[in-house]
Amino acid sequence: MNSELFTHPIIKGVHHKKMLPKGTALVLEGGGTRGFFSAGVFEAFMREGIMFPYIVSVSAGSANAFSYISGQQGRSRLIIEKYVNDSRYVSWRNIIRCRSLFGYDFIFNTVPKKHIFWDQDVFNHTDLEFLIGAIDCVTGETVWFNKRELSEDFKEAIASCSVPLVARIVNHKGMMLLDGGVNDPIPIEKSIADGNTFHVIVLTRNHGYTAQPLNHMWLIELFYKKYPNLVAAIKHRHDAYNRQIALCEKLVKEQKAVIIRPQRPVSVGRATSDSKKLLALHDEGYFEGTKSIDLLMRHHENSLRHTK
Image (cartoon, rainbow, N blue to C red; front, top):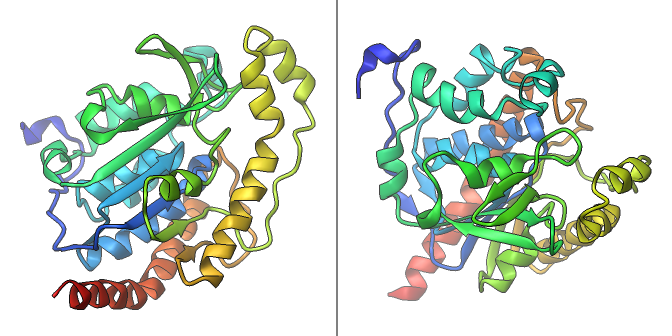
């Protein structure tokens, strides 16, 4: 590594000191730049050295998890301060330049290789199951990629973040892929299916939010007429979201889950580039994440006692 390549001080990764017990999952919603709320939550976890044995993510949830797994405190905040308001990060100009609202080459290639160091070595050596979901446009089903099979060019994460209409379909491993949040906006069902018994669910919407049907389905149907299963999945995305929210709330009542989310209605949109608003959202995430630490530590200590 040549530090002269980077335009900002290098933030070295650190290995997490407290791996939570097997069966404990971190479940991450997406939401574009609203995902910086989740990045703030991760800052609170990193401060305590907390890591999960299982992380399941879609869209922006997967993108922000990379800095968390590599243990780089302050990296996401520095990205907000220096680069989110750069037109190469997110802007309508990118639709013309790279056929995507978000500049994925800039986000996943330029920033970590030239501006703000990403510690891939710590990421690679952190022993956990990390899943990224994307929708297969042909089948209409979610495809899950595990940490050990992720590409160096972040193709799986880019696919998971590629929102229909404002991003290109990603051709990867013979599949045509888009946003993993279409079928699994909150991938709690995947976490349960994989055998986890306690779920820490990080949402990017406030309590009481419900998803509504899209009012531009005619455009989806026109644009993706070659992919009827994708169109059907997008049409019913709001049903999936509301079903998964209801399941999360049920698990909380059963003391099988904790939900961490913004406490006020979120004014930040999926493609907000206002760094002041995003820093405030990030700090709210840090505050809410900090509030959950005692509960997570009690869960950790109880599990240790039961294994003795």
